[in-house]
Length: 418
Image (cartoon, rainbow, N blue to C red):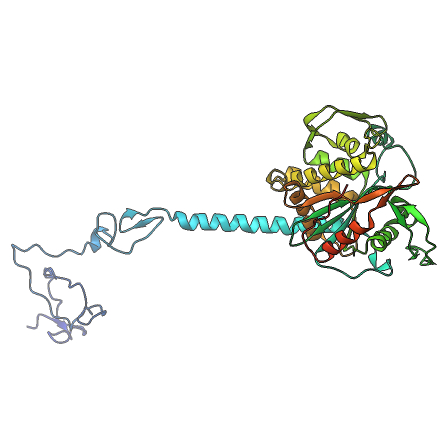
Protein backbone atom coordinates (compact mmCIF):
# COMPACT_ATOMS: atom_id res chain seq x y z
CA UNK A 1 0.00 0.00 0.00
CA UNK A 2 1.25 3.39 -0.95
CA UNK A 3 2.03 5.39 2.20
CA UNK A 4 1.92 8.67 0.31
CA UNK A 5 -1.25 10.61 -0.21
CA UNK A 6 -2.68 10.24 -3.64
CA UNK A 7 -0.54 12.07 -6.15
CA UNK A 8 2.51 12.42 -3.84
CA UNK A 9 5.78 10.59 -4.33
CA UNK A 10 9.43 10.99 -3.54
CA UNK A 11 9.89 13.05 -6.63
CA UNK A 12 6.49 14.68 -6.74
CA UNK A 13 4.97 16.15 -3.62
CA UNK A 14 2.66 18.56 -5.27
CA UNK A 15 -0.20 16.08 -5.90
CA UNK A 16 -3.03 14.86 -3.70
CA UNK A 17 -2.09 11.17 -3.39
CA UNK A 18 -0.13 9.60 -0.61
CA UNK A 19 0.49 10.56 2.95
CA UNK A 20 2.68 13.37 4.23
CA UNK A 21 6.16 12.59 5.37
CA UNK A 22 6.49 12.66 9.14
CA UNK A 23 8.21 15.72 10.62
CA UNK A 24 11.94 15.30 10.77
CA UNK A 25 14.49 17.12 12.86
CA UNK A 26 16.36 19.68 10.82
CA UNK A 27 20.06 19.39 11.07
CA UNK A 28 21.86 22.56 12.14
CA UNK A 29 23.16 24.26 9.08
CA UNK A 30 26.34 26.30 9.02
CA UNK A 31 25.63 29.58 7.33
CA UNK A 32 28.54 30.72 5.32
CA UNK A 33 29.39 34.41 5.58
CA UNK A 34 28.84 34.90 1.89
CA UNK A 35 27.13 33.24 -1.07
CA UNK A 36 28.68 31.05 -3.67
CA UNK A 37 29.76 34.17 -5.55
CA UNK A 38 31.27 37.33 -4.15
CA UNK A 39 28.56 39.80 -3.20
CA UNK A 40 25.77 37.20 -3.88
CA UNK A 41 23.62 35.85 -1.04
CA UNK A 42 23.05 32.03 -1.00
CA UNK A 43 19.80 30.89 -2.51
CA UNK A 44 18.04 28.54 -0.10
CA UNK A 45 15.72 25.95 -1.55
CA UNK A 46 15.52 22.47 -2.98
CA UNK A 47 18.64 22.95 -5.10
CA UNK A 48 20.93 23.84 -2.20
CA UNK A 49 22.59 20.75 -0.70
CA UNK A 50 22.25 20.25 2.99
CA UNK A 51 25.40 20.65 5.01
CA UNK A 52 26.61 17.96 7.32
CA UNK A 53 26.22 18.52 11.01
CA UNK A 54 29.13 19.97 12.93
CA UNK A 55 31.11 17.60 15.05
CA UNK A 56 29.99 17.47 18.68
CA UNK A 57 33.21 19.06 19.90
CA UNK A 58 32.94 22.06 17.49
CA UNK A 59 30.41 24.66 18.57
CA UNK A 60 28.01 25.56 15.84
CA UNK A 61 28.34 28.98 14.24
CA UNK A 62 25.60 31.34 15.37
CA UNK A 63 25.09 34.55 13.46
CA UNK A 64 23.08 36.04 16.26
CA UNK A 65 20.33 36.90 13.84
CA UNK A 66 17.61 35.44 16.05
CA UNK A 67 19.01 36.81 19.29
CA UNK A 68 18.65 40.49 18.46
CA UNK A 69 22.42 40.97 18.20
CA UNK A 70 23.24 43.75 15.72
CA UNK A 71 26.44 43.80 13.76
CA UNK A 72 28.63 46.72 14.69
CA UNK A 73 26.75 47.40 17.91
CA UNK A 74 28.24 48.14 21.28
CA UNK A 75 30.78 45.49 22.17
CA UNK A 76 31.62 44.59 18.57
CA UNK A 77 34.93 45.51 17.15
CA UNK A 78 33.69 47.36 14.11
CA UNK A 79 30.75 48.12 11.91
CA UNK A 80 29.12 51.02 10.23
CA UNK A 81 26.41 51.78 12.76
CA UNK A 82 26.27 55.55 13.38
CA UNK A 83 23.64 57.33 15.38
CA UNK A 84 24.05 60.57 17.31
CA UNK A 85 27.80 60.44 17.74
CA UNK A 86 28.32 56.66 17.94
CA UNK A 87 30.49 54.77 15.50
CA UNK A 88 31.47 51.17 16.18
CA UNK A 89 29.93 51.42 19.63
CA UNK A 90 32.10 54.33 20.76
CA UNK A 91 31.12 58.03 21.19
CA UNK A 92 32.84 60.36 18.75
CA UNK A 93 34.50 63.62 19.82
CA UNK A 94 32.30 66.57 18.70
CA UNK A 95 33.53 68.29 15.53
CA UNK A 96 34.38 71.65 17.14
CA UNK A 97 36.03 72.94 13.97
CA UNK A 98 32.78 72.60 12.05
CA UNK A 99 30.76 74.18 14.87
CA UNK A 100 33.14 77.14 15.14
CA UNK A 101 33.06 77.61 11.37
CA UNK A 102 29.26 77.65 11.36
CA UNK A 103 29.17 80.11 14.25
CA UNK A 104 31.67 82.45 12.59
CA UNK A 105 29.76 82.27 9.32
CA UNK A 106 26.54 83.18 11.11
CA UNK A 107 28.21 86.12 12.88
CA UNK A 108 29.79 87.41 9.66
CA UNK A 109 26.50 87.20 7.77
CA UNK A 110 24.67 88.99 10.62
CA UNK A 111 27.29 91.75 10.72
CA UNK A 112 27.11 92.12 6.95
CA UNK A 113 23.33 92.47 7.03
CA UNK A 114 23.52 95.01 9.87
CA UNK A 115 26.28 96.98 8.11
CA UNK A 116 24.40 97.12 4.82
CA UNK A 117 21.20 98.13 6.61
CA UNK A 118 23.04 100.84 8.56
CA UNK A 119 24.65 102.17 5.40
CA UNK A 120 21.35 102.57 3.54
CA UNK A 121 19.68 104.02 6.63
CA UNK A 122 22.42 106.60 7.14
CA UNK A 123 22.72 107.36 3.43
CA UNK A 124 18.99 108.12 3.27
CA UNK A 125 19.41 110.75 6.02
CA UNK A 126 22.16 112.72 4.24
CA UNK A 127 21.01 116.19 3.23
CA UNK A 128 22.65 116.82 -0.14
CA UNK A 129 21.47 120.40 -0.43
CA UNK A 130 24.50 122.15 -1.92
CA UNK A 131 24.88 122.08 -5.71
CA UNK A 132 28.48 122.84 -6.62
CA UNK A 133 27.58 122.73 -10.31
CA UNK A 134 26.20 126.25 -9.80
CA UNK A 135 29.68 127.50 -8.94
CA UNK A 136 31.20 129.19 -12.00
CA UNK A 137 34.78 129.59 -13.24
CA UNK A 138 36.21 126.88 -11.04
CA UNK A 139 39.94 126.10 -10.83
CA UNK A 140 41.21 122.79 -12.14
CA UNK A 141 41.22 119.79 -9.85
CA UNK A 142 44.51 118.83 -8.27
CA UNK A 143 45.83 115.68 -6.66
CA UNK A 144 44.22 114.55 -3.42
CA UNK A 145 40.83 115.60 -2.09
CA UNK A 146 39.76 118.94 -0.60
CA UNK A 147 36.88 119.42 1.84
CA UNK A 148 35.46 122.77 2.87
CA UNK A 149 34.17 122.20 6.42
CA UNK A 150 31.83 124.86 7.75
CA UNK A 151 30.36 125.33 11.20
CA UNK A 152 27.29 127.54 10.90
CA UNK A 153 25.30 129.31 13.57
CA UNK A 154 22.13 127.67 12.26
CA UNK A 155 19.54 127.27 14.98
CA UNK A 156 17.28 124.96 13.01
CA UNK A 157 15.43 122.52 15.24
CA UNK A 158 16.40 124.33 18.45
CA UNK A 159 13.80 125.26 21.02
CA UNK A 160 13.91 128.53 22.96
CA UNK A 161 15.20 126.53 25.93
CA UNK A 162 17.99 125.05 23.79
CA UNK A 163 19.01 128.50 22.54
CA UNK A 164 19.20 129.80 26.08
CA UNK A 165 21.09 126.78 27.38
CA UNK A 166 23.62 126.86 24.54
CA UNK A 167 23.97 130.68 24.56
CA UNK A 168 23.29 130.89 20.82
CA UNK A 169 20.88 133.83 20.78
CA UNK A 170 17.94 133.98 18.40
CA UNK A 171 19.29 135.72 15.32
CA UNK A 172 17.44 134.97 12.08
CA UNK A 173 19.16 133.23 9.18
CA UNK A 174 22.58 131.68 9.55
CA UNK A 175 26.22 132.66 9.24
CA UNK A 176 29.50 130.82 9.16
CA UNK A 177 31.01 130.51 12.60
CA UNK A 178 34.08 128.56 11.43
CA UNK A 179 35.58 127.52 8.08
CA UNK A 180 38.35 125.00 7.38
CA UNK A 181 39.93 123.35 4.37
CA UNK A 182 40.87 119.71 4.91
CA UNK A 183 43.21 118.23 2.31
CA UNK A 184 43.71 114.46 2.19
CA UNK A 185 46.35 112.77 0.10
CA UNK A 186 49.46 110.62 0.06
CA UNK A 187 51.41 112.91 2.41
CA UNK A 188 48.96 112.88 5.28
CA UNK A 189 46.06 115.23 6.01
CA UNK A 190 46.40 119.00 6.25
CA UNK A 191 43.80 121.03 8.16
CA UNK A 192 43.80 124.78 7.42
CA UNK A 193 41.56 127.21 9.27
CA UNK A 194 40.17 130.19 7.34
CA UNK A 195 39.53 133.03 9.83
CA UNK A 196 36.03 134.39 9.44
CA UNK A 197 37.48 137.92 9.38
CA UNK A 198 39.78 137.13 6.44
CA UNK A 199 40.00 139.98 3.93
CA UNK A 200 39.01 138.59 0.51
CA UNK A 201 37.79 139.84 -2.86
CA UNK A 202 34.21 139.16 -3.85
CA UNK A 203 34.33 137.49 -7.31
CA UNK A 204 31.72 137.42 -10.05
CA UNK A 205 29.12 134.76 -9.39
CA UNK A 206 25.73 133.41 -10.38
CA UNK A 207 22.91 133.51 -7.83
CA UNK A 208 22.20 130.04 -6.45
CA UNK A 209 18.45 130.62 -6.44
CA UNK A 210 17.83 133.34 -9.03
CA UNK A 211 20.46 132.24 -11.55
CA UNK A 212 21.25 135.92 -12.08
CA UNK A 213 24.87 136.82 -12.87
CA UNK A 214 26.68 139.32 -10.64
CA UNK A 215 29.88 140.84 -12.08
CA UNK A 216 32.98 141.37 -9.99
CA UNK A 217 33.58 144.96 -8.82
CA UNK A 218 36.77 144.49 -6.82
CA UNK A 219 34.84 144.75 -3.60
CA UNK A 220 36.66 143.52 -0.48
CA UNK A 221 34.62 141.68 2.18
CA UNK A 222 35.08 139.48 5.22
CA UNK A 223 35.06 135.83 4.19
CA UNK A 224 32.00 134.92 6.25
CA UNK A 225 30.00 137.66 4.50
CA UNK A 226 30.00 135.61 1.30
CA UNK A 227 27.93 132.94 3.02
CA UNK A 228 25.47 135.53 4.30
CA UNK A 229 25.04 136.99 0.81
CA UNK A 230 24.25 133.82 -1.17
CA UNK A 231 24.91 130.74 0.93
CA UNK A 232 27.31 127.82 0.45
CA UNK A 233 27.70 128.17 -3.34
CA UNK A 234 29.03 131.73 -3.11
CA UNK A 235 31.25 130.79 -0.17
CA UNK A 236 32.84 127.99 -2.24
CA UNK A 237 33.21 130.35 -5.21
CA UNK A 238 34.92 132.97 -2.99
CA UNK A 239 37.31 130.45 -1.39
CA UNK A 240 38.26 128.99 -4.77
CA UNK A 241 38.73 132.43 -6.35
CA UNK A 242 40.98 133.73 -3.57
CA UNK A 243 43.05 130.55 -3.17
CA UNK A 244 43.02 128.88 -6.60
CA UNK A 245 42.26 125.57 -4.85
CA UNK A 246 39.47 123.33 -6.14
CA UNK A 247 36.92 122.26 -3.48
CA UNK A 248 35.69 118.67 -3.96
CA UNK A 249 33.23 118.36 -1.05
CA UNK A 250 31.27 120.80 1.08
CA UNK A 251 30.27 119.79 4.63
CA UNK A 252 28.29 122.00 7.03
CA UNK A 253 26.96 121.42 10.54
CA UNK A 254 24.89 123.68 12.78
CA UNK A 255 25.01 124.42 16.50
CA UNK A 256 22.46 121.80 17.53
CA UNK A 257 24.02 119.00 15.51
CA UNK A 258 27.47 119.76 16.87
CA UNK A 259 26.33 119.65 20.51
CA UNK A 260 24.29 116.49 19.95
CA UNK A 261 27.22 114.64 18.38
CA UNK A 262 29.44 115.44 21.35
CA UNK A 263 26.82 114.15 23.78
CA UNK A 264 26.21 111.05 21.67
CA UNK A 265 29.89 109.96 21.81
CA UNK A 266 29.91 110.44 25.59
CA UNK A 267 31.82 113.73 25.63
CA UNK A 268 35.27 114.67 24.40
CA UNK A 269 38.37 114.92 26.57
CA UNK A 270 40.37 118.13 26.19
CA UNK A 271 43.51 119.43 27.85
CA UNK A 272 42.93 123.14 28.34
CA UNK A 273 46.27 124.85 29.06
CA UNK A 274 44.82 128.02 30.62
CA UNK A 275 41.56 128.84 32.36
CA UNK A 276 39.24 131.31 30.60
CA UNK A 277 35.71 132.70 30.64
CA UNK A 278 33.49 134.25 27.98
CA UNK A 279 30.00 135.46 28.84
CA UNK A 280 29.03 135.63 25.16
CA UNK A 281 29.62 131.95 24.50
CA UNK A 282 28.97 130.77 28.07
CA UNK A 283 32.52 129.42 28.44
CA UNK A 284 33.87 128.95 31.96
CA UNK A 285 36.81 126.53 32.02
CA UNK A 286 39.51 125.64 34.46
CA UNK A 287 42.95 124.61 33.27
CA UNK A 288 43.76 120.90 32.87
CA UNK A 289 42.27 117.74 31.38
CA UNK A 290 38.49 117.52 31.39
CA UNK A 291 35.67 115.90 29.44
CA UNK A 292 33.40 118.41 27.71
CA UNK A 293 29.74 117.67 27.05
CA UNK A 294 27.83 119.15 24.13
CA UNK A 295 27.00 122.44 25.79
CA UNK A 296 30.55 122.97 27.03
CA UNK A 297 32.06 121.94 23.70
CA UNK A 298 29.98 124.48 21.79
CA UNK A 299 31.03 127.21 24.20
CA UNK A 300 34.67 126.16 23.81
CA UNK A 301 34.77 126.37 19.99
CA UNK A 302 32.78 129.62 19.84
CA UNK A 303 34.83 131.59 22.36
CA UNK A 304 36.76 134.47 20.78
CA UNK A 305 36.63 137.48 23.10
CA UNK A 306 38.54 135.76 25.90
CA UNK A 307 41.70 135.55 23.78
CA UNK A 308 44.16 138.26 22.85
CA UNK A 309 44.49 136.85 19.36
CA UNK A 310 40.71 136.79 18.99
CA UNK A 311 39.78 134.87 15.81
CA UNK A 312 43.18 133.20 15.28
CA UNK A 313 43.24 131.73 18.79
CA UNK A 314 39.67 130.59 18.38
CA UNK A 315 40.43 128.75 15.13
CA UNK A 316 43.28 126.90 16.86
CA UNK A 317 40.87 125.73 19.56
CA UNK A 318 38.37 124.68 16.88
CA UNK A 319 40.99 122.58 15.11
CA UNK A 320 42.09 120.99 18.36
CA UNK A 321 38.57 120.13 19.40
CA UNK A 322 37.33 118.84 16.02
CA UNK A 323 40.34 116.56 15.73
CA UNK A 324 39.69 115.23 19.25
CA UNK A 325 36.00 114.73 18.39
CA UNK A 326 36.88 112.80 15.23
CA UNK A 327 39.30 110.68 17.25
CA UNK A 328 36.61 109.89 19.82
CA UNK A 329 33.98 109.13 17.16
CA UNK A 330 36.34 106.67 15.43
CA UNK A 331 37.21 104.62 18.52
CA UNK A 332 35.98 100.98 18.80
CA UNK A 333 33.93 102.05 21.83
CA UNK A 334 31.79 104.17 19.50
CA UNK A 335 31.96 102.29 16.20
CA UNK A 336 31.29 98.83 17.69
CA UNK A 337 28.74 99.97 20.26
CA UNK A 338 25.31 100.34 18.62
CA UNK A 339 24.06 102.31 21.62
CA UNK A 340 26.62 105.00 20.74
CA UNK A 341 27.03 104.52 17.00
CA UNK A 342 23.40 105.03 16.01
CA UNK A 343 22.78 108.08 18.23
CA UNK A 344 26.04 109.60 16.94
CA UNK A 345 25.11 109.01 13.31
CA UNK A 346 21.58 110.24 13.88
CA UNK A 347 22.73 113.38 15.71
CA UNK A 348 25.15 114.31 12.96
CA UNK A 349 23.08 113.35 9.94
CA UNK A 350 19.99 115.19 11.14
CA UNK A 351 21.75 118.56 10.82
CA UNK A 352 24.64 117.76 8.48
CA UNK A 353 24.41 119.48 5.07
CA UNK A 354 26.67 118.26 2.25
CA UNK A 355 27.23 118.88 -1.43
CA UNK A 356 25.57 116.64 -3.98
CA UNK A 357 27.59 113.51 -4.62
CA UNK A 358 29.15 113.52 -1.14
CA UNK A 359 28.44 110.10 0.34
CA UNK A 360 29.07 108.25 3.56
CA UNK A 361 32.46 106.99 2.40
CA UNK A 362 33.54 110.57 1.75
CA UNK A 363 32.45 111.58 5.24
CA UNK A 364 34.19 108.57 6.76
CA UNK A 365 37.40 109.54 4.94
CA UNK A 366 37.03 113.08 6.24
CA UNK A 367 36.66 111.99 9.87
CA UNK A 368 39.51 109.51 9.53
CA UNK A 369 41.78 112.24 8.16
CA UNK A 370 40.85 114.57 11.01
CA UNK A 371 41.67 111.79 13.43
CA UNK A 372 45.06 111.53 11.73
CA UNK A 373 45.71 115.20 12.44
CA UNK A 374 45.22 114.49 16.16
CA UNK A 375 47.50 111.46 15.98
CA UNK A 376 50.35 113.49 14.54
CA UNK A 377 50.04 112.00 11.05
CA UNK A 378 49.21 115.37 9.46
CA UNK A 379 49.43 119.13 9.82
CA UNK A 380 47.08 121.72 11.30
CA UNK A 381 47.54 125.44 10.74
CA UNK A 382 45.88 128.79 10.17
CA UNK A 383 45.97 130.45 6.79
CA UNK A 384 49.19 132.51 6.73
CA UNK A 385 48.46 136.11 7.73
CA UNK A 386 50.63 139.14 6.87
CA UNK A 387 48.68 141.85 8.72
CA UNK A 388 45.29 143.52 8.94
CA UNK A 389 43.29 146.12 7.06
CA UNK A 390 40.26 147.85 8.49
CA UNK A 391 39.88 145.11 11.09
CA UNK A 392 40.13 142.36 8.48
CA UNK A 393 42.98 139.81 8.44
CA UNK A 394 45.09 140.00 5.29
CA UNK A 395 46.55 136.77 3.91
CA UNK A 396 50.23 136.47 3.11
CA UNK A 397 50.00 136.14 -0.68
CA UNK A 398 53.41 134.55 -1.22
CA UNK A 399 52.90 131.91 1.45
CA UNK A 400 49.34 131.22 0.35
CA UNK A 401 50.48 130.71 -3.23
CA UNK A 402 53.16 128.22 -2.18
CA UNK A 403 50.76 126.44 0.17
CA UNK A 404 48.16 126.02 -2.58
CA UNK A 405 50.78 124.69 -5.01
CA UNK A 406 51.89 122.07 -2.48
CA UNK A 407 48.28 121.02 -1.86
CA UNK A 408 47.38 120.86 -5.57
CA UNK A 409 50.42 118.68 -6.25
CA UNK A 410 49.75 116.63 -3.10
CA UNK A 411 53.20 117.43 -1.76
CA UNK A 412 54.34 117.60 1.85
CA UNK A 413 53.28 120.95 3.28
CA UNK A 414 56.23 123.05 4.43
CA UNK A 415 54.50 126.41 4.74
CA UNK A 416 53.91 127.60 8.29
CA UNK A 417 50.70 129.38 9.26
CA UNK A 418 49.85 131.74 12.09
